[in-house]
Image (cartoon, rainbow, N blue to C red):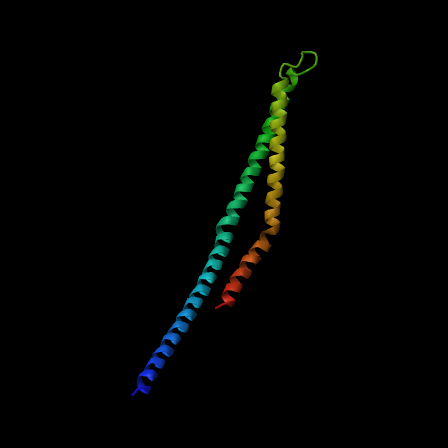
Length: 141
């Protein structure tokens, strides 16, 4: 009779161990599915939200910097007749601050243009990276 309870206890241990392994496999499969879903969402958000929004923002900023630079150039041309040597320089500070503002606008325009070009140039690589992350997550299934 002592062998029968031992056999029952051993069977119970094997069943519990099997359930534990199955639970671990289920958890791993669940984790892999979550990784796939995360990769899919990252790819989708980049393609449909982040990249288009960043392009719009940079183009808007570029347009505003161009408009500001042109406005400041017109303003400097308007100051020109009053800032001659024969009449003195009554607008020296105003002209200098306008020139500095023009320089700031031109630098911002150039930097924005460079950012936009870099983003467009590396868009395919970023997209490929996200696709590879998705494929890697799917390979774990």
